[in-house]
Amino acid sequence: QVQLVESGGGLVQAGGSLRLSCTASGSITSINAMGWYRRAPGKLRELVTTITRDGITNYADSVKSRFTISRDNAKNTVFLQMNSLKPEDTAVYHCNADITTMLGVIMNYWGRGTLVTVSS
Figure 1: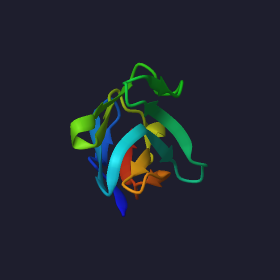
Figure 2: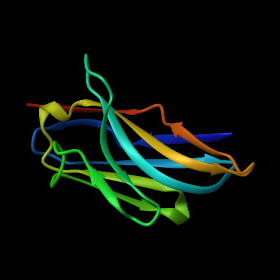
Figure 3: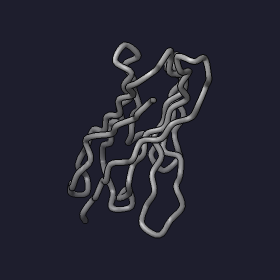
């Protein structure tokens, strides 16, 4: 059994910052790519950013230069530093990871999400 648990969401004013964390636990051999997705009210889920195990990153155009993804492989944790937040960043942010389990199977996992609300 593998779980991803996010934390760090909350209410912030426009222009403010938040830092999200997501920790994977369970029957894990290794974690490959990790990433953050978000789902705003009334919209489809969208990619925010991803990071490979070696640290190669990819960002949606809407968050480039404002958001930074990083990870701590030793702690099975991925972070999302969000600066200069805008009301349009309001969404539930979900962690995602490709994990090789102790059975040797590579599976994709999702966290339940953490709500980020940016007030104007």
